[in-house]
Length: 66
Image (cartoon, rainbow, N blue to C red; front, side, top):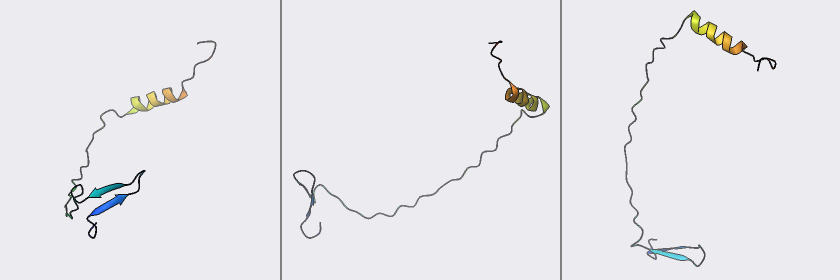
């Protein structure tokens, strides 16, 4: 690019890109990151939830009942 002021791309018939189409610049960018840890309270706990999970895990449908 610096010597000829153009770049040739070998795609099909060859494409020439001159300096009017290309702008090269060097930039330095500072990126900051904000970390967030959500605090969630699970209000549904206790024996009822455990029993419901056991019932759901053991649930089967017999073919004569369906």
